[in-house]
Image (cartoon, rainbow, N blue to C red):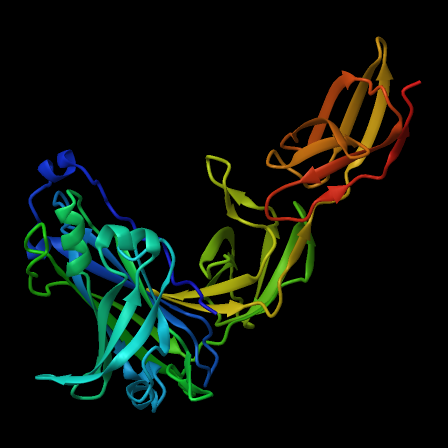
Amino acid sequence: MQTRSLKTAALALGLGGAALAAQPALASPTDHQTSLKETISTGAPAASPDVSFEADFAAASGATLAPTGAITWVIDAGQLSPDAWKSMQVAPGGTRLGTFMSALTGTKPQQIRVRGMFKDAQGPYLAATIGVSRAMALKVGASSVPATLRMSKDGKSLLVSVNLQGPIGRIVSLGGTAVLQSATLTLQGKITYAAALHAITLNPAKPTLLNNRVSAKACTTPACTALQPTIENGSASVHLPKAVTLQAPEKLRYGYRVSITGTGQPGNKITLATLGTDGQLLASPWNAYVKPDGTFEVRATVRSGFASDDSLVRPAAGRYVASAVEGNATVLAVAPSDTHVSLVQPIFRIQRKSGSRLHVHVHVPGADANVKVQIRLGSKTIASGMASKSGVFSTTIPAPLSSGKLRAVASVAGADTAFSAPITFSYR
């Protein structure tokens, strides 16, 4: 399971002569700043979590952010299993190590796969490839980008480097610009080959402070033919193990206030989210602090979240996740099963009006203005509209010229549809 990899990166991509002509001067090395956020799928002792490292790039105040041509993550060996490097060294070509996400490789996480072991002046290293989505491959002129993994000489860190000069140069040659806002590396907890699982990450059994870093090199030319020296490092520290648990109900009613409980480290802030279909965390406004006894209780009115354009941002139903934050690091606890959320059965009334008119009134307890209500006679929809903020829909329509069962249907993205009890209707 991929957990948070993944805040979507932003790419300024203007493919036209105007975009090329308007290209700003690149910032100096000191203007290119990098920060790091770490997300761990479980903090349980001796577990092998998926670990995501999100690098964010920014420019100093008043400066223009230069394209990021190379990124190196420095991962604390204390977060790895004792045999992690050996397991990766002997992994056959094509073995999946994790994912990488950036706007230069696609809008979704792309797989990182082993290419083979090599050696250079710095010593042995593992060469890997990062996939590029089909849509981006047409723009960057390649179906993959290179990555390398090597252990530091003192054995205390795993260095994972990604080179993006090729994709940037290709986009610039087409008259565009390619400036990353973020890039996320996710290491799998375990890799698979030879019909066996091999642990890569491993949470320590005893409390341990782990320090991870990231550095980036900005391009010195618009086509990124050369790189500036590394100036700014971002870091994230976390104490592991950090056990967090979540007891999410299996069934909930849409729009009703409920308690969702779990355990964690006293004083930690816990925020609830749901997992998207691509493994991204879909944040919610629901949070609480862990009490001195190690328990927390999040009070939440469970509804789907929508953007200003009415697109679904967070479904009410799904796999719930609790996140505990320590500095720039987040430890997750994923509920053992999905939570199903259903709209409450609509309360449906009709009233005949003079002039062969029919007034319909529907109340959906817990509903809001995102809930759609339809009035159906058999399989035919004779009226529809959105509920009010209080979950009410009412309208007057011409009385149907047929008989049958009238029923109100309430629906909203991210939750199960609800049907009212039927009302027998006759046009006479």
